[in-house]
Length: 453
Image (cartoon, rainbow, N blue to C red; front, top):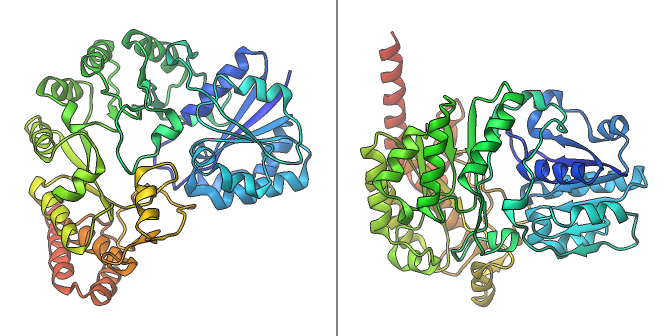
């Protein structure tokens, strides 16, 4: 039987110690097949105390090494693959979203021995059992597993598992919707597959006592409310458990929300609900193919606020058909709904998406977003745009980002903020919005200071 080391590289500075759910699932499958797994998840280690991968390899003595890959960590992943390939004779597996979306890019490096596409639970045991060094990478296509048959993840294979403070709970996989910018169908498919509510809460009951530092539960399904009544039943069972742990739920859809669901989410400990708006312009929004309307988003926002919950919204700047003028509709819509948080992301067309085809067809500049992350740091410094069109250039996209962040006050108000506001105001000729925003943020700080005295 083999000993496999599974590795997850940190995308950004982690604010929570939440283990990688996919690697936990794979490690459990391998354990049931008689193999030994060790998971090195950088999220569970303080940056200053992060052991080098070379030392982890020496300490764990694996027969095979597997990496999960994200586009945001592409460059570092490739450097580590080259290092491990140079220093050892161990077979190297790479899976995850980047391996699935950018298979050709990864294969062209010649660094991994196996590139696994999609969900690997049904294939990982076979690959590990036959793993060897290969002259050229082998691409391993997969088919989505039946999530009702997956074993509950076990976390004691994780190095540093005692630091886990947020428990990741899978209740479903896949998404039946076809948003033009989203590549989740390449990773998990359009077929929505759900676990039973009873099985989900039974997993929590079994695993939480083993992780005493956990103080929150997080559901990051692609579409958790695919069947709202089923998710309501899960929430009722979760509430009955009386865990006294807050629940976070990602990827909620406005058109699947009603007052009962909002009340249940609140009772389960959700303090904030987040919805994808993408664009406030009707024409651009229609091209996204979300399958919902601006009125439904307004209604969901109203329900959220009426329940006393915080509201967050996600927008994408530079979608097909977007330009500087249409972008103003997004800013106006965001200010109309007045959320607690707004996430302003730049459009990055991933392979296999309708948006990728649109930009290619319309002759736009297309730089592969090979080191892109959707993690929003609320920064005044615009990430590098990967596309441009004649009526929405890279400079205009940077300006649109700065304007949106400033006019909705969505940036960290720290010692660097005045400098970034000043330089951005000059560069993008937005002195008025920058000054007004600085005044609003400064006033809030003074009110907080005054209230604390």
